[in-house]
Image 1 (spheres, rainbow, N blue to C red):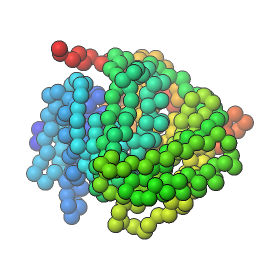
Image 2 (cartoon, one colour):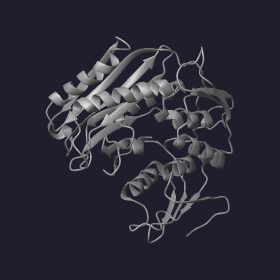
Image 3 (tube, helix red, strand yellow):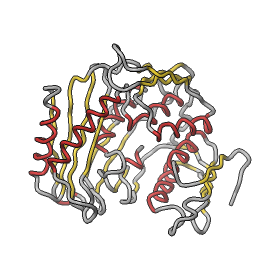
Image 4 (cartoon, rainbow, N blue to C red):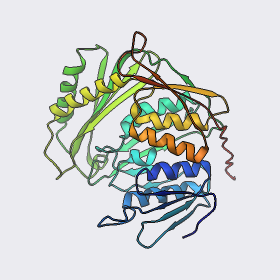
Length: 358
């Protein structure tokens, strides 16, 4: 295996995606050892190999070395050069795993669904100055596990720098929107989900609209299933999300659409209680964009940090030598719900040097 003096070394398969993404952005090589070394089936999984192939497609000059058992990976990133990329994702993970374009599972129980990313991550990116006519996430086909068969198209304009942000006022909830989807099952499933979710949420706010999306034929993927994604919008433009999907075909007990709708509504209320200007799904995205922003102060108010976000902060320190000022803001008159955390940093001034050759 190749080694390099300035490469970062890690052990284990946890947070593999974080490490590879930050390696690509910082330009620092990374070596990861003991990937499921003691497992009956050691080494990289198909979905991780698929993610590495995607990184290879969107960069120019990347060097990837994997040993015979797949337990050691050396990744020396190339340059991000943009352009159009088509990629078949592994059906073992949702497309949200790779977006954080693409074909695979659009909605599952593990990764953020494309519905939630479209409703929460895109408005967050706009806050940092990433916007334009070509900025969209379009769901062409839905795919539920285990068969997949979904397809999305993600297009994003090129920006040279990111704007610093000051997101410190979460505001009050003014409306709730949602998407109840069903594929290869009765269209009535989606309506039952909507009714049960509204039975909970109508007690709190009148402005609720939950759309139903029943895709048919080739657009419905290869496996049956249904689910719900809910998004609460605040008066200051913050989006908080929650979602649930039915169990994959042949796995676990059957889920009633009424139970799924009620449980998803409770999850949204819990997310609202956690609060902050960014929901728990997008905490790490906000912190990454703050890190890459111009050399100016950025602030964001978050709810309680998730374990994934805490590890992400450690990785940001390793790859970019950047540390955040963390101030706890206990709930009181001004801040309702759970305790909040004010995150402050000065961006590194990351600039997009890529120029497409004509």
